[in-house]
Image 1 (cartoon, helix red, strand yellow):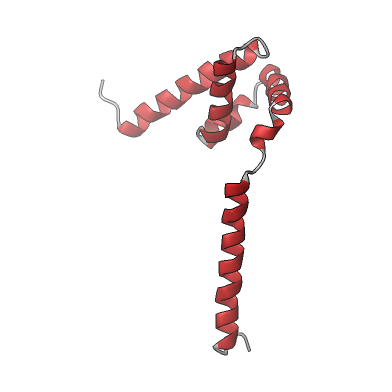
Image 2 (image 1 turned 60 degrees about the vertical axis):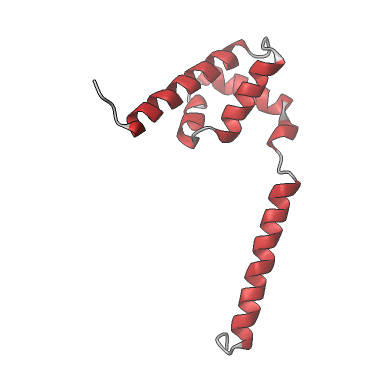
Length: 105
C-alpha cells in the first residue's frame, strides 16, 4: 500500500504525539531527556497534534503540571523580542514614508 508523503508525515506526527502522551502520563517520573522530548514536541510539533494532547482530561492535568514546572521554557526569548521590535520599527518607517509622500493626507 503506497502512501502519499503527506499521509506518511501525518502518521509520523501521530506516532510522536502518542509517544509524548505516554511520557506525559508518566510525568513527573521521566528523566531529563524525556522531559526535553515533551518540551520539544510542545514547542515545535504540529499545532494540531499539540492541541490534541489537551483534549484528554487526564493529560490536561499532566500538561498543566508540566507547563507550570517548565514555565521559563515557554517564555519568549531575546530573539523573539528583537524580531517583534524589528517588525514594529519597519512598519513605523513604512508608514512615515507613506505619510511623507502625501498618501496619508
